Amino acid sequence: MEPFKLERYFAKYEFSAPFVLSASDCESLALRELLALADDEARRLWDGLSLGYTESPGHPLLRQEIAGLYTSQAGPDGVLVAAPEEAIFIYMNTLLSPGDEVVALAPAYQSLHSLARALGCKLVPWTVTKTGQKWTVDLDRLESLLSDRTRLLVINFPHNPTGCLPTLAEFEAILALAERHGTFVFSDEMYRLLEYDIQRRLPPACDRYERATSLSGMSKALGLPGLRIGWLAGRDTQLYQRWQEYKDYTTICSSAPSEILALIGLRAHDAIVARNLEIVRANLAQAEAFCTRHAGLFGWLAPQAGSVAFPEWRGTGGVEDFCARCLERQGVMVVPGSMFDYDGPHFRVGLGRRNFPQALERVEAAI
Image: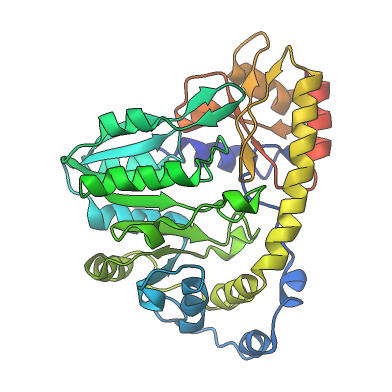
């Protein structure tokens, strides 16, 4: 497998730079904050927790709570708990074979592309489009890319790194195109629940198409990435069986404390998401005002949902030079678009952290 550029970049700078402008997760909760949200049952489970092995597909109560986020017929028996990156790895390795064709939304979190390439598949990118001051998807282009040879379509909405969110009609059209060709769909929904307008929230793909699998987890909207808990949800029982068998060779089972803490977080997800959306909305306004104030240097492309945006650098020198300048002069880590294999002069902004205004002040000093 090729080196994971984004993760190597974070490994180098995330814990040494005083400010991280490009984090995609929301403000993390402290353990005491999360435990304060526990109901009586979950608190008893936490206080009496035994640090032994857990059930391989996930704690039954946790899978039941996750299944409640979906309306598909699979229920808890269609949910596999795993770290989000592990879940991507398991899915790709159980579905794909050398020579398969994979159409994938681009730019993207690298493993959504690189795992298919590592497995010997032909990867066909479906690139988001700049339309005015926002990012959109081109359905005509997707239709031209899909065929009966396409084994898998990989989508990600709300999109990382652009914040693109199609309309419900566009989303249904995407799934209909996949169904026309009998194509499997892998839907990365890690940023779902962070829609600025709840009326624009898309349904999980696995609820709308029987060959779709939805990926989600605790890391982004719920601000609990340290739990390392995510999941796959789907209705294909044969594929689910292969996921379970493959997990025996990755982690076998999840961390017992993490599963109970994830249960607490999911049961309190309305309050946590509301808190994180308040932070995102405030930072969104700050980012737009900043780019407007420095319109000669930055082009703002408004995200429609999620905790990230993908503005344009218009200043002298390339975007890589801008990111290096922020880091060297002011200790602010900014991720250039090249970390997502994107050639344009764009960089990712993370909108979910409380110190975002202070990081912007540092950027302003750097430029």
